[in-house]
Image (cartoon, rainbow, N blue to C red; front, side):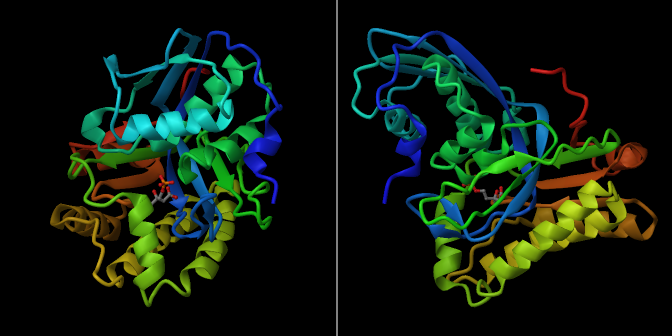
Length: 328
Ligand code: PMV
């Protein structure tokens, strides 16, 4: 099988030039959970996300004498992050002697406890595209970024994006596209619960759930149906049908994890307390809905009309207006 990554690149890369790119982070409204091919990072189901505007990663690349990497201003010579970055870069270089200085900077507040692999690999793929003057379309860059992190496929646009699972064995049709829906009233709140490193990476958590959870079997089909319904609700800009679907999809994903053996539980007592306050407030008429990923922090979606109530209920939340970014 021809590797889809290699097939997208020219045989030899040109000498690099300076290039820089920004990518927003994203939150899945319809979750990616479970791979059909771990080496190619191919998902069992499609997923759909909203990007986090100015919360993201800027990566700059320049030609150098030797490879170097800095993260938020500090040099990084080893560790998991550096290894992953250079493994991804080497998929482009394929043995060509083209040393690079890479500088990457996150604008995501550390206190928000959000992972940065999505925006990180999307920014890196775009910066490499610029540095080697590849001129690849966003869809191809989205496909390539998948090798770094699945959720990165959705970080190439502001607003809503959908990652189609694809069907090709080589993954050449597994990439995201923008939904091109403007919903200026849409808001996100990030409620931090625990901002330390996660107990288990999403990569390991996914594999463990697929391998051991008796509740995983129905997930891929349900997730695909949810993704289609969530896309329809986004296109209709209907928070009343979107919110319950998003919350149910996230809780169903967490249910597959909790049934894993041994159980995988990313949520903390505070996460559940937030959900309980949210549910009580909903009975009182608040129109806000929750989603959680492979960590304890809770994210809410709602429309601007509910923003004041969300702020007073959860004063520790950061509010994001995903359609009010300055174009980057
Ligand atoms: O691609 P990763 O390793 O960032 O996995 C993402 C997994 C979830 O955040 C739980 C769901 C998702 O679709 O982002």
